[in-house]
Length: 89
Image (tube, rainbow, N blue to C red):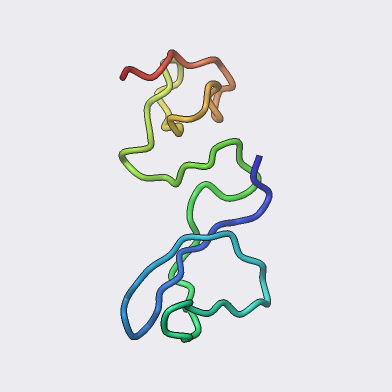
């Protein structure tokens, strides 16, 4: 279970983006350019979460019981708590 929130950072000059766990108050720098990274947004799901997958169409599926979205790497639905069917290959 992840306890730190993940953020999407961008290098201003190149537009290169990276997603990583971050601590508040720290300054993060791009390895290639040495520029300070700017925070673009938080990545869902927020911590604490049982899933490591970001909320994106390719990583989500519908729960068989409550029809709410859940990440593909979860066995139990985070909304209703019931066991979901296996993911089709």
